[in-house]
Amino acid sequence: SLQKNPTMVGILYTMDIDPRRATTCFASIESVSAIKGEDEILFAMNSIFRIDDIIQASEHERLFQVNLTLTNEDG
Image 1 (cartoon, rainbow, N blue to C red):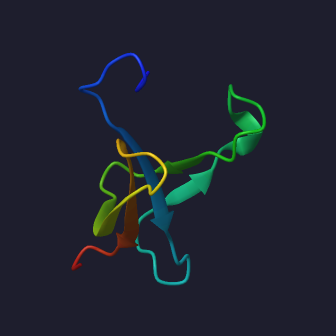
Image 2 (image 1 turned 90 degrees about the vertical axis):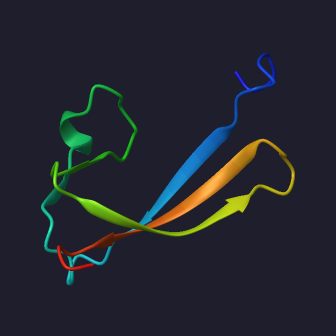
């Protein structure tokens, strides 16, 4: 936990995915997930995400949000 270890930071990833433009395969696995209530998405191993930005959470100095966008093969 972040509170117990001052050298650790937390990272929250957010992913922007436009299914009309995506060339990478992905699928919702919510119905077969071992963790009920989670909206899980499975991505192909060759998925490429662009890092849009990294934002430090204002109320937590060691918590960061990384905003990603799913890209196609040519970026």
